[in-house]
Length: 158
Image 1 (spheres, one colour):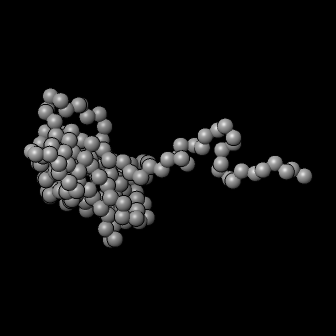
Image 2 (image 1 turned 135 degrees about the horizontal axis):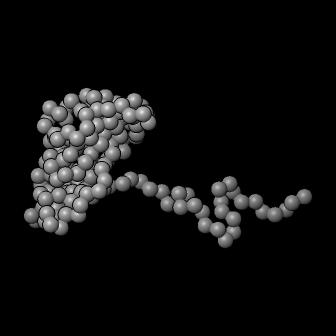
Image 3 (image 1 turned 120 degrees about the horizontal axis):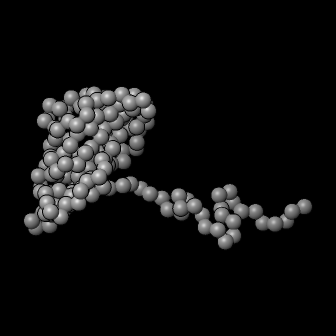
């Protein structure tokens, strides 16, 4: 009969650390976008894209955070409710020559009605880069460019 003590499932062997995903829980990601005018950028995200101003800091303002909080009526990715977890974007004002070149895009997962969202943004005058397109990997998506040049891609399960 084996009398060696047993470890609870998922516990690392002696001398071995637990995987990072077990030791450290990530609770969100907040990208920071460099912008030329933080007040203008925050106003654009709120008035055009439907975000809410979370805070603005500095005198004069130089840093802000906007958020989009899903409502009970909105569905999460692929129809599952995402629990109302807000999405945050931080806006950092810096001189144009100090703005690092942007080499990526923000991908925003939309619960449903991607075409309705596109139509609403189009009516608000956004700069469209790509109209809604059904992709072979199972999503329907469109992309826009905000006034400081950052690309936002909105996608939903097809």
